[in-house]
Length: 92
Ligand SMILES: [Zn+2]
Image (cartoon, rainbow, N blue to C red; front, top):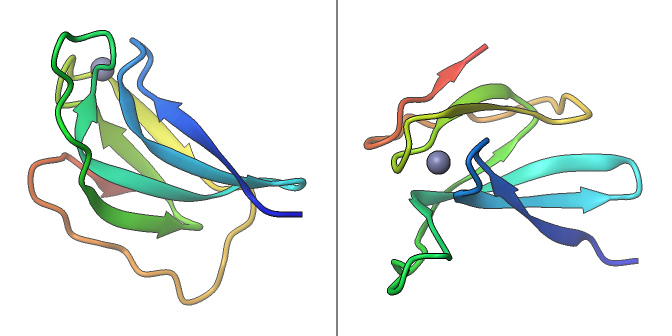
């Protein structure tokens, strides 16, 4: 079985990235540089800035400023905490 990629959205429906899911739940977040509003006439091209595994992390939508907390099902060892410009991210 291959993993499933699902849109990961802020509370207002802007797409912040893709969550990679297996049968055991989401375990990896592919984070876009900018939130994407696919209802806009001319959505921005997506650019991936980070792949996040394991950590709990607050991700802020740069369109509407809403926050959503990423929390993978399973905490993995040796996770890398990225430092990212343009998005307010902190580990929790
Ligand atoms: Zn948003």
